[in-house]
Structures are given as structure tokens and as C-alpha cells.
Length: 116
View 1 (cartoon, rainbow, N blue to C red):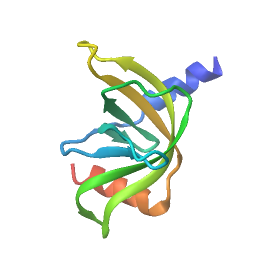
View 2 (cartoon, rainbow, N blue to C red):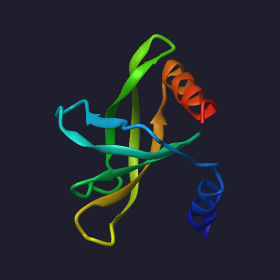
View 3 (cartoon, rainbow, N blue to C red):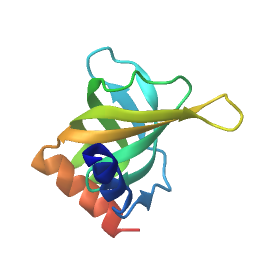
């Protein structure tokens, strides 16, 4: 019941669609994981060509198409909470929850969201 309630609370957070391509990389492996589809205060949704392992922690980097707050990328740690195949089955949606979001990365996200 508590997990279900937390899930509903997360869904109430305002999501912001991303109009530019924000590519996501795994800092531990250097692998390109996919691109950001939407952002909110506690996480993001990723679109990728392969499913990510569930409940795994990742150290991630998002490359920005322009400089924001003097940054060309932002870094954070996140845990994968859910995933599902797209209708075509060729891509996968993954929900990532921020577990460590440095202040400069948070400010960068806030600036992107505010400019929408």
C-alpha cells in the first residue's frame, strides 16, 4: 500500500516534455543509454533501444545541446523504477528516479523547465 501511494504521488509531479535531444550516457561504462523524453523534479523518463535493468543505480550524464549556467552537461545518480516496451516493441520507456542530484545539475534542470 505504501509503495502504491508513493507511485501515485510521483505521477502527480508536473512533467515537462523535452523538445531538444538530450542524450544520456552511463558514466561507469560510457554507453549511450538513450534520450530524455520528459523531466520533473524527482526524475525523468528515458527512451532507449534496449530495456534497462530494473532497480539498478546508475551514474549518468546528460549532454546539453546548448550551454546552461555555464554547463554543457549535467550529472546525477538515478535508479530505474519501471520500464515497458513501446507499441512497436523496438524501443523502451524507463522511469528513472534521482537519487543524487548535485545543486548545479538541479539548477540546470530548473532552467530548462522554466524556459518551456
